[in-house]
Length: 205
Image (cartoon, rainbow, N blue to C red):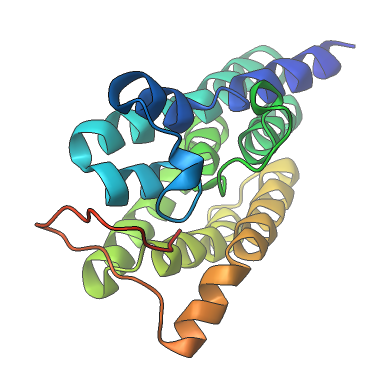
């Protein structure tokens, strides 16, 4: 029963569509109708810049971290990964947007791992930053970091729920980026312009 409460709480936290709300409140626009149509932090950053994108990154990480951390502290790793996975599911299909398409779970996944297995989350973050700086593709950085998670968890001898969660997260993130994979293969995937704000409509992570 307690684990079920953590799962529900995690899903509701993950369902908070911060990318949609921030853009709606401060720009009066629907983020789902610009850029990639994604409510996640990458689309907000690419389309509206760091002023709006960075707060969304922080909030999306927090909504994965909080339920995973609380559940882990109160009931152990299994409860923590269940809450973290539920938060990721909520970000993907948020109840507050009537289960319509949400984000691709990357920032929320990172937050969940920081909550349940901080060292795994931190190393995954380092992988994301390194790949992004080298290639400037948020999608490639996200998939590389996700795929690294189960390897990191195994290398650090994390408990089996963390390893299983890492494998689940890797598959989920890669599957949700399948459109990006097609664009990468076609040579049409957009890179982030590190010092320039994109104003047009682009497709991306």
